[in-house]
Length: 324
Ligand SMILES: Nc1ncnc2c1ncn2[C@@H]1O[C@H](COP(=O)(O)OP(=O)(O)OP(=O)(O)O)[C@@H](O)[C@H]1O
Ligand SMILES: [Mg+2]
Image: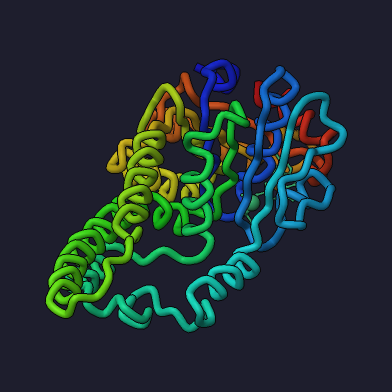
């Protein structure tokens, strides 16, 4: 199975991830272009504050709104979310500056101090940071949205992705506790109100929490559905990248997220006249043998390093040609 097969799988979500700087954004952008040019309506999303999708396309998507990508024959849209400005919006909503919220100690949010057990949840898994929280919020938003055939998510480097993968489980447990607490509080309030004869007002909190929990479960199921989701692992042929990708694969397995495809990027091209290049290439080819033994040969895509940076639609299409 090659990346061609991946593109023909009719997936709803393609997540692209790996170690920092290995070519995640380039691969995600190239796949998004190819899908769009094959007639799909595609949205590429990034929560990287460095605006790398803009840089990769050599266009500007930093408005925070969905924008149509120029220069692509098809319906390709890009959304680059800035975690900082999204943080400002959340600050407005919760009535205190986002950076004053200590995720590891949620009791800093007024009204949540009653949530016993939340501390344990937080300790048992790393608390999400802004970019993972936003990536997951986008997965929630688009999980049952028919406006786009495929969503390509350009993820942040591995550590962040692992935290992203923990979010569904974390939210499920968090919302479950909130719901338990809310129904307890709500019963107590009803009793007090009936005792003191105050008028009953409709409280939508439980309903909203339940809806949110349902959405989280839909998104979690989508991420685990091998007919609808694939996580493409991008790596370079160095031992450090291999080890990190092996750990990533274990984590993806433990969350039941399908991840059959590997892109080995930036392989040193053959150049017999350059001793340095030959050494690097031989080392890369050795490492690729090891990669084949770990991940299998059939779903591997090898890509040589270009002699220049990959920027703009034309170059991204050249990357597609090398990948497919
Ligand atoms: N095969 C390649 N040949 C040459 N340059 C490449 C290749 N693949 C990617 N690049 C270049 O390497 C740099 C890093 O690529 P990219 O931004 O896609 O990586 P990334 O994994 O998304 O990085 P980050 O972890 O910072 O998000 C970019 O300048 C890109 O143009
Ligand atoms: Mg990137």
